[in-house]
Length: 324
Image 1: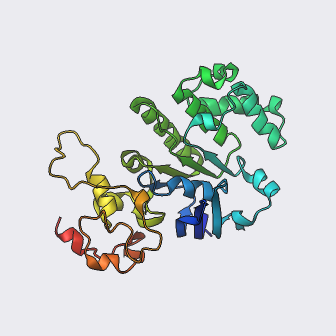
Image 2: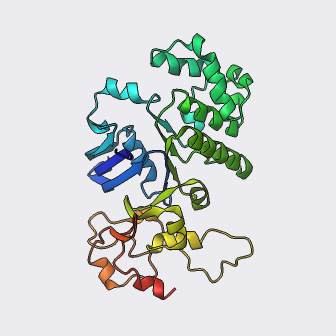
Image 3: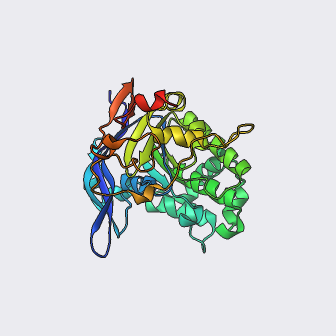
């Protein structure tokens, strides 16, 4: 029995510029298991949101999916006709964007936005009011929100509304692209708790994308660390946390502020991931890595297995870690 919910094979995604095509996601391969929360992490500019949109096949111009496959229920999403794609969205496969207002109609009451979703899939809304009430209850919202416009709700309430809409039709896979961005810490914590409870109760496969490692290591079962559009390390959460094999993951974890820990003696991560060089033959992290040597600039590292289902992309491991 196949345990994979999503298979991503040789995916290449980029953006058209005035003079060229810039490749952002490069020959990306990943298998996501059924019923897990799979975390995808990396700094802003590392390609996380582009990857999320590509998996959902919602990349818009100037973005372009150049090649690759995304296999879901034995079908390649990249080759689906538009009508077939619409049928599986929200019913089998749903997407929660970075900002709730991007998913809500600002001039339509919440009730009718739920109705619109049902009607789009040939379902009579009047016979599903109980179902709408049930999903609102799951995210701890009162039914009174149905008579509000989006701007009348707080940021947290809007985000909960979008989550409720995304699970209304019982999807098997939900992609969450920075779902708690801009929310205060307490609201963020409550929403994360709700998401995990929903996922565990219904066995939904979640692909959770964020730049916040503290969130990711709290909620995920497995994690992939993305840098310059490719995986540099992935594995089970505890392995990634306790046995970093790539300097990028190691440095990001070290730079998470901790109560009672001084930051003075911690190796700082300098620069940003958007300055990658497209045709660079070596490791894209080379110029930012405090452990790099000349050889790192000459050969692009392959993804290697460290232990059971724990992989890394670094030619200097384990040597670099012996000096930390």
